[in-house]
Length: 195
Image (cartoon, helix red, strand yellow):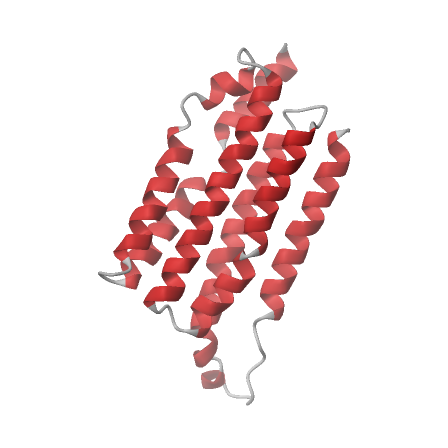
């Protein structure tokens, strides 16, 4: 299968996930500015999740540009990633509605870990299909950025017992680390184009 179908399907799922998240933000009853204040936790949750989905969409886009054909294992790995990403609106809404209480913040972290693991699996399937000498494999190296992110998420999940704000700060830290698209993949694409 050509990668175009996979990209189009994945882009559609990303768009639906973001749409579901924004539809969860309910319009307040009232016309004063202070009527918006109860929505602040929901809106902040939305912003964090929107950033995460943007990061995944951006890096997913770059990752898929490294391949020409899509195998069955790449299709399943991609679906695995999309499944966990599709749960982001649920945990985002629950966390915001409950004003960043411990259990919703911890579950948000669990979903972030599962998304990161699923992305790592997809990346692994793609690098395997390209072969060990591909520029992508060389660019990714040991993928300390990806492994470090999972570790920070796990620390964030367990930090919820101390204070949920620590957990949220760690989740935000990972988002900041990944905010710029993965330069290793961009470097790989440029190297392949110049060859």
